[in-house]
Image (tube, rainbow, N blue to C red; front, side):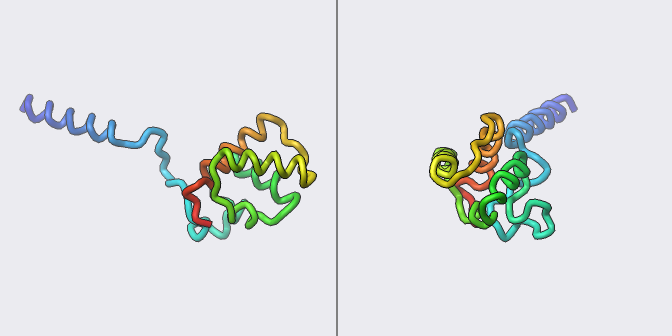
Length: 114
């Protein structure tokens, strides 16, 4: 019996170690077709920072302009610079910009299929 408990304990520990760190109940959406059309911020995928991106972007252009992307954090950062410097976008506060960049690079990053 003791060996069985040891084996079970080792198996449970292995399963815990194999689980992705920071995993959530809902998997991150990487395809526009999987974003629920009734989502409040559609076509943006759900995620922390979606409201900052929604309100920061919708003021000037369609959100499809954003979901047509799929860029690295560095490219999103350059695009924000370009929009502020050349397109008249209001400069977001540094903490808001960081939230936007984090959201864009995670949720509409290089693996995004818009």
